[in-house]
Image (cartoon, rainbow, N blue to C red; front, side, top):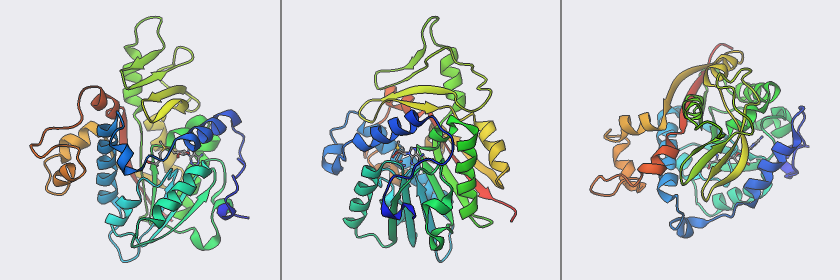
Length: 316
Ligand code: SAM
């Protein structure tokens, strides 16, 4: 009885049920905007910028081989399907805890005329072992992608370990894990500058709110909760700090070795004039044809909150 029947997989590990349910309800309730309406989003430039970053990451790290299979954990409404088509993957499996989003992703794929096969499941990738999520013939991938979702796994050590176990068990040696998460360094830096007596930082379009004064060394590295708000995207949803060095060390237990990590700002500065990704900035409307960035001020500050990473499976 895999996630194939689209039933919501009840978490197998101990977890604060409210958080998983809040997250699931939040994303299920977000309307599918469609390309036409997306143009009117107050954070359209930020969305385009984030999409460009994900394209850079996907292009850089998708293995160049004859047959490439991708597992998109936390696939949401299928916002990365076109990016995977552009790098010519052959097969795609998307899983997300929010079953309404999964249905929207499936519909998006059906309307896409993509050149790869895709299947979609609803399930909890961080608390359920992979053999309960995917059928036996769909448990081998060349790349696993975790875009803007892995921070939900850092609620507890058990969830973070299950997430890494799931990733590692579907990758052969040389397989790749890529993702985007909020930067623990940025959170710690910005939180250290919060005005005395306040428990919040951010700007007009995003903010991070703590329930109590945070311990900025983030030790122990799990369960460091904050509430995140991003205009027109995320409304005060609980998230967890991913202390990067702890994540990196934990990943080694699963034979996943970090090969690349950069903040979104660094990626922009390094790649904006590159022959490979510079022209894509204009095509994805992140800059206009005169080279002026569509993203600056508060939106750039919100983008700078994130980093991207790539790990490679070593050993057996
Ligand atoms: N990856 C997509 C993207 O980049 O457009 C969606 C990102 S959205 C910010 C975060 C997604 O993570 C949501 O769709 C949410 O339902 C999903 N998610 C959160 N916890 C999850 C879990 N335990 N298992 C699977 N998906 C999860």
